[in-house]
Length: 112
Image (tube, rainbow, N blue to C red; front, top):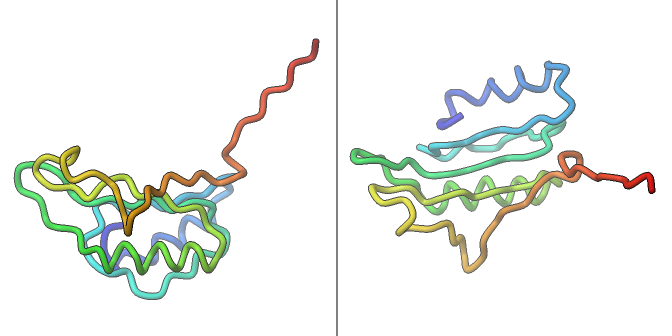
């Protein structure tokens, strides 16, 4: 889901029987506006990379991050994108966001 015009995909996702539901907003190409994340476990965001890329605006990422925080949804910011994506990194306001939803964490119990 890269633009606000595709926001209805979230509602379609909510109707599935998937145990863990995540939204991939990559490449993020516009502000998504107000997003109802009820029933969503995780949002992954990133900019577009490649030779011909469209820039990702920091305000769009922050707006989505703030909504995730307010609604208790794990947030991961993968990259700013660009022609050389590794050079641009994934630092957002002085922090790296690599959150994972609790429901996706696997616990292995030793029976010994």
